[in-house]
Amino acid sequence: MIKINENYKKLQASYLFSDIAKRVTAFQAANPRKHIIRLGIGDVTRALPDACIKAFHAAVDEMAGDATFHGYGPEQGYDFLREAIAEGDYKPRGCDIAADEIFVSDGAKCDSGNFQEIFARDIRVAIPDPVYPVYVDTNVMAGRTGEAEGGRYTGLTYLDGNKANGFIPDLPGEPVDLIYLCFPNNPTGATATKEQLQQWVDYAKANRALILFDAAYEAFVQDESLPRSIYEIDGAREVAVEFRSFSKTAGFTGTRCAYTVVPKDCTAYTANGEAVAIHDLWNRRHTTKFNSVSYPVQKAAEAVYSEAGRAQVKALVSDYLKNARYIRERMEALGYDCIGGENSPYIWIDAKGDSWAFFDALLDKAGVVCTPGAGFGKCGEGYIRISAFNSFENVQQAMSGISEVH
Ligand code: MLT
Image (cartoon, rainbow, N blue to C red):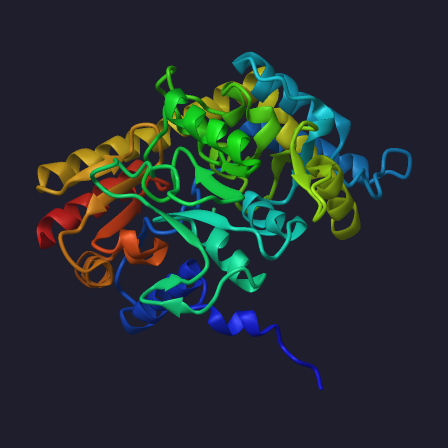
């Protein structure tokens, strides 16, 4: 008899964004004439940058000739892309990251979900609340938690984010081994300073812990004093893995390309306390389970680092940030407390009541899709997240709709 992984039965709901998509589809079916504006899931709406499209086309043409065709590439990604990333994203920020510490992949969601696989089941995991649900759910699936009780899984260490701490959680009060952090934060849009990240790095070093740092939204950081990478922090090479993505920066949500940085100095320990390089473990896992991203997609991603590509990505990011500022200003003018939207495409809004009720009201009355904060954890209840990924016209229309029904 084939038996299931019983841990899946502990999962409280279907994946947040599938759940929302189902509700929106049902609403649209019941209201076929209603124009719906989607500011829920952080999915980009603008075309790929022209530099990426040109490189993409040229690479597809290469696939059309036997002499230039590409079969399997290196599992870790082609050197041309890994080198462009090290040179383009890390060197200018003073981060000591080598090309062979970069693993190209098809998404930061997959990598941040899969990374926990290389650690023991009995490690203690710290997860912020509110949080991107992938970090929690993948640890539940792996059996690192007990059942859910009162909206939280037993066995996890939750790091509360709230107005008092500006949604930057404090260090855990108990020892933990694996820590998930995300800045600029999804869902709250909060950003952490270098001093704040230094505390986490120091904690990880003192406790032989590891930080999984999700930097998928780093391109939205405008304030030059804020870190874009955990490797801007002293000592991070020994205790942090970083996830990045071309999805939100260069519009690759449908094209799929991301990367994970695993410095060779990061160590985990065997049951006997022997140090093992995490890079070797991840490389072993990656080469076994993954065949990297297609050649044309990696060529398109490489073009992000060309002169034209950089300028086009900058313009895209700045358009989305204009939307974010507008959303925040309009919501504040309506009397809502907001955070985010300055160095982030997400605006986190105190809904002054039940977050799913607010979600339903916005959809019903204004035809606007947001994301209910409760879907990101217990501390998200009472909040909603609005995403700036849409056209300015749609954002204006959404805000007018919200003002009317307010
Ligand atoms: C979000 O809306 O939180 C993100 O789009 C989800 C993701 O990147 O997987």
